[in-house]
Length: 264
Image 1 (tube, rainbow, N blue to C red):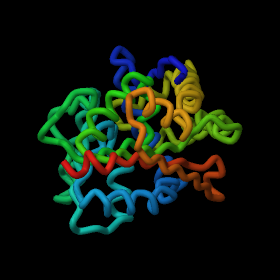
Image 2: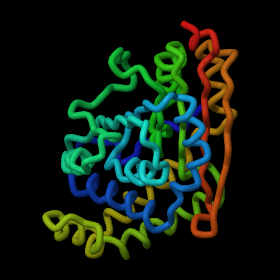
Image 3: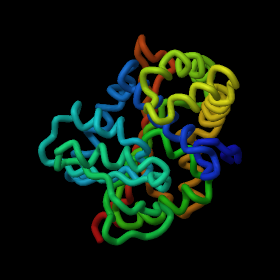
């Protein structure tokens, strides 16, 4: 069973400056370490099979989605973004929608991935977000998507491994170095106070990183959830890739909808 632990990044009562910094920090990590490129082979195959229209229902800042769009360089792609907490930092949604790229669009109203959304029945991509759902929620996601013939792609930059925990231990130090360069000006003072003078932010980042690693789903755990949800004929293809800049590596899990569901 997945570890039932909370992450500060999931809590609505956590101050806005932490959510904003966490999202900007993650975006900076993609740009500096480039580990999003490690997902490109799996992402290309997934999008080609999907027919060009996909959704990331937990897109956060949308930074990684934008970077992946540039790397994919596909003209016939429609990438919808949504996030349950986007109203905490609507500037991220506005930034994506002001890119002038018709291939990527951040929805004004969040889509609840745990409910049926007939207007957005399409293959789903979860980038560094699937571990936020517990087993029952994951089963619900599978039922709502696989039953309609829509595949699911899970991309994670962490897992339950020694190297992943090492990278999470280094994360707060990297965040302290990056803070002056990535924090929005209006939030710089309060973020700096709770990072350097009162090190609350580094501790929260450390906790969230370790918990994320603990909560990540493996190929085996995904298959267990699928079996418990009544899916016996679902193929789960998992890959692991690493680079010199990111030796902890990234994982990708492609959960393919049953052929019978696709034929409906």
